[in-house]
Length: 431
Image 1 (cartoon, rainbow, N blue to C red):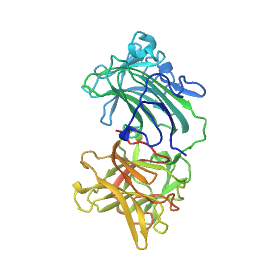
Image 2: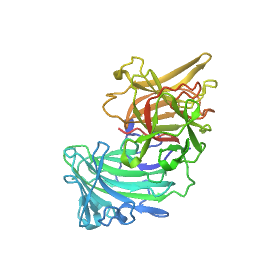
Image 3: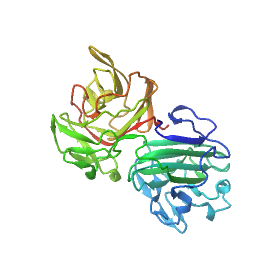
């Protein structure tokens, strides 16, 4: 089952901006099956809910300056508009009917961006009220008089991308995707001009109840909030195969130690040292494509092999592992690697990895690994860093674990982990 069902209109795409789960791009004119209105079970309509207040008419919206550096700042109300850094501005097309961008989307929002000379991009924010399967529908119209815009739809941070497209002057983007949303998930739609000069675009975002049983594709979601931890057990917010994970000190259950996560709004993260691990109770199951992603803060970049995630079964050679490797023992030699078992007697691993550029530049890194059609794609901080053949049958019959090799229980990870998610299906990288 595909991770995200997508419908879109596009003329051409290439490289990592193309989703692994469907086709998409930029086109002229109609929506090609993408809904034109927030019909049916409409949860939120960006333009209809806009009323000049900081949280919109249904209290689920936000209007932000996206500072491109993992920080955001709320825009300020000014009459029936929200204004931010430099010329960043969001208002209704209904209040600016003569704007060229609004000619094709009169019921949308008119967004003015400052360009790369500014530190921030204008962004819409929708916060999910509960765990449910939702459809996100976007429409963007860039007039001939404007600048080329990079359209970004993402969850919680720019690195956790759901869709990107580049819209040149005169282009329109229409796109629809279906995702499993957790309560409190932040979905943001940002417009980033590709040049120094900013411009305008008409923008519409609908959020629609997909009327599907939750979860549809989410196998695992661990956020390490206080409410998800009972004793030594960390609850799975997807409530799928693994109801909970046990935090172990050696072989004994232990209360999970928590620290601050990469973002204040995401709350706590989980602390690991070499004797600690997080162990699932059941195999994830599923077959075909899957996406594994999490935030990690590596506290020991000189460790030779540090297991981040594994559901490897060394007897059957099923499963996948994600690990840090550093055979040189120097920080500059740190690699991110996805690996499978290539032989069972004796056990041998085959992996695809790449050196992490400037590993000490950012304390937290967002890792996404996509295994599909005999290929593994590694994404670091929202950018594809490796895509190469990696065979290996899945699913595994071994429960997933974090902080150790799932088969021989080797524990050697000194790191912090946050916002772990595993989906059936494939997500894109970003750029």
